[in-house]
Amino acid sequence: MLRDHHRRVVERLRERFGTDPDFPALIIGGSVAKGWAKDDSDVDIILVATDERYARARAEGCYGYFSTEDCDYPGGYVDGKIVDLQFLRDVAAFGSEPARAAFVGAFPAYSRLPEVDDLIARIPVYPEHEQQDRMRRFFGQVLICTWYVGEAEKRDDLYLLRRMSSELVLFGGRLILACNKILYPYHKWLMTALRLAPDKPEHFLDLADALLREPCKASAEAFCACLANFRDWGMTLGDAASLFMEDSEWNWRSGRPPIQDC
Image (cartoon, rainbow, N blue to C red; front, side, top):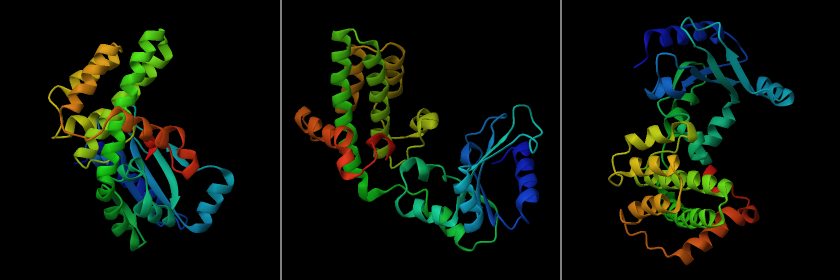
């Protein structure tokens, strides 16, 4: 439910853009739409432009909208993206999880495009047909990252240690989200989404926190073990190494994005 001051911002945005022929629809998203907002949270918007206006945005390399004048509360601002209707169609058809997650809870402030309501409903849906494959690949990354943390500690390589510890938490987190069919909301909201996930190992978040605060081989192995014991993933370290090559080293051959961005 929107806070009163966020609702006032939405009303001002509706007044500002509602009759603008360049923008036939305005969608409210972000933490305000998801119910995750704090008092000083910004209001995230998606301005759906006409083909002509979007072509101009592409030519100028300017897809953003930012304003503080519509907000009457401390720290408030509006942060927006300019897209076209085809962008919404593409996200609904083959968007990444972060792209889809941006529309969780989203609603139109106004729309003169009949298709928008249907697209908003179709976009934030977990791709269940990919769930099993994603869980397998995420757990493969967990195993390889755990090995890398041990290598980093052995070599006293601080960069590798911290990088792989963070990657380990990322892929462990993505594994849990996949188990729960929850879309990955990118890094900023990962831990919030994980706290809300009902099906996860006991002490999972505590072990993730310990690994991030004091990255080392022991904390990495404890984190990995909690996931390995949670379910039988049917995977050996050799299987994981092959998947790691496909997803992180050779993904350029297939044109797939890095697995952390899927």
